[in-house]
Image (cartoon, rainbow, N blue to C red; front, side, top):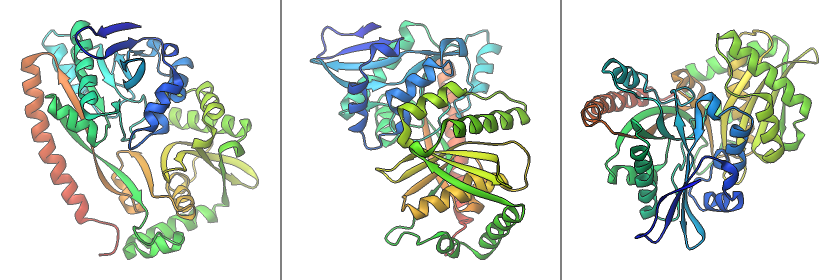
Length: 390
């Protein structure tokens, strides 16, 4: 732990390489005061990523958490990392890194304010005031300058974060995700009611896909919180690992991580287990916040390929559950235009960036302006293809 800034100000900024130096109750209390207190930003979740080796220095994620203290109280915090690559971020800057390298410059390590492997929009600058959000951004920039890093990045923040970032001169990048939202005023009564709100071709497609999975003899069980057994977690992790390997890649998360968050944050998990002839063959994992009525599709896997099982496990079962529980929103994760045909609609996302090299900063700024125009046009096009009835 080190002090980054103090003296003439009425606060102290500290940088933490060891998450055990941070008071979990103070961090979580600050998180609870935010507009969108995501469970992924609870210190238990972040420590689990670090302690189980998933987001740790050996994997290219060296913690550099920044905290703001005023008269002994934690008034600001941001989960930040020194990153030696760009994996696990879902905002792609590989081209920037390549351009640096071709010009004989070093892009990595960079400073990243984000939740590892979690492209979920929400607060990243935990603060009690807009002024303190700007202080945190200045602290991130100071840390990058003092340690001679190429850049600093803030991913998937909320409105307050980006207002502060723009005020501090950071560049804003735009993206798109696909989220399902319950009907305002009169929530859907059941899944059939939801289907009735879709255009006829979309409704028929979903019905056909669900019927094919059912005809394959697949049934599902939903288990929430402490209903999820250790055997369930082991089976899920096996499915998750097999599916990653089937696509030629290694999973980011290990069984130790899942067991840790299951024990420390049990109320935030929902698992769907697919069975055939009494034997489990697939599982999907959804994170939930019952207090807000919010759900996030996170991971899935299967022990064998079954046509259309992915859609049932990752979209239709969670949506049916969310409707039954009167949840407000289900976020389907990063990317995936195909989600529109399943009733998830386009939602803008943003990230903020600061680059130390002036010429590269200007080049990236020009690129982001052009890219932003393209994203805006893409959003307009997607909205014209709204899956719901007019």
